[in-house]
Image (tube, rainbow, N blue to C red):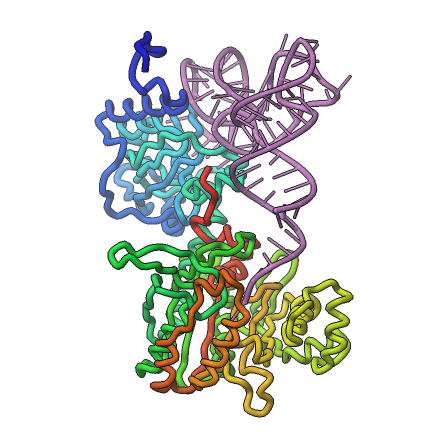
Length: 526
RNA sequence: GGGGGCGUAGCUCAGUCGGUAGAGCAUCGGCCUUUUAAGCCGCUGGUCGUGGGUUCGAGUCCCACCGCCCUCACCA
């Protein structure tokens, strides 16, 4: 840098935005009052919703009538609360604050007459977005709003960043995803979605725990990918100078645990797939896989239906306040909104075989491969050089899947064996597999197999797959010899299940984009 | 990857045919002890996503790039 006169007279302070500079000045004013602008440990804080529930109509009325009489005993409940200042109405000697926490909003009145001087001065120096700690009795104002009539107000934390506009809030989806910390406090429905997400995941765990399944953890870093056909993320393990990939499924390790003698296991965790990013796909997402020795895809179907119905019931009876349950709803009547439609989780889920749906959609049986080829050609679907079964599946996805009623959770059963490499073929018709896929709201939510446990058939199916892989696939995909070894040791017959947890949360919270149910969705760096 | 849309004050958004950059809220100053997006008076605040180009003159037209949204394609 050449030596020149400094453009500005002093420190980096000049670089800060004027709005931040004003807030820094207000922070110093708070410190000058003798308060710690960044707060401290607070005892006996209750949520805003809990505080509002403690309001006592009779005590309030008694105080209003007799409060000024000699010897009157004030029975109004007193509360200590903390929340972010969302609105700030300064009437001179009476300041109204609207605080917000994860349970909702609550009004606080800071009166020069009734609040201590420190608190009143703090209210004067507060900015929107600061967090304040208020203490005082619960009253109703003459417009009927439950209010904490502050006897003291203290600093929770100073906010140096100006908050979004008080009425429109934060609307820009890009900032909402990149700065979720603003989105969460600004948009209560976002807080509700993520509160519910955590509760849904807790309930999923409890569901399997109560049925005797053991939660386990298997490797994320692996020498080779397996259990699905997605492209993995690659990394390098320096200590051993070897290539590693991040898991694209948990299947092959969980099955090894069945071999080892764990009869019922599940793993709920993050999966990584190096593929497209869109409204239904994030590069890292959450799945749950479940395995049950001596079960099959039908035992898994029963589990899955009660899990989904139970989750939907939980959502249906949960109000905006996560601590409050609304009047009970019969589980057989549970319905949830999904965009423009309503999904019926209460009635028994629909079941169709793959062939049934196929024939209904195409008008000819699945055995008529000649017509299938013609049809694929007419519809300009991929067909050149594809085996019959893949052409049939193209047609199925293109024509039959859209026929599934999005408002009716639907199991599609008996998929072709050729597209189900880890699945046991049906004994009476081996060209079809003991498998189902669950569709709800137009999305594929999960899949389940009667697991293949014959090592010789498994080897053959792996080899078939390898032969069909392109060069890039070949480079990362090798036979998982150890998994075959495990099958040789003997894996009990089993049912297996995989569910997309993010998609379940989307359905339950009525969010159409996966980015709205992942706290920090993947974003390109700016 | 294809197509479409968007990017302007801290936030939400206008900006006509190419002619000095606008509003509301927030901020700042003043008044107000029952407000409800409080109200009233006054004042601030801009690298118009980035970089080029056309033009006497570009937020506006053209090109490239960046980011986001929608959609199609791809995706066991």
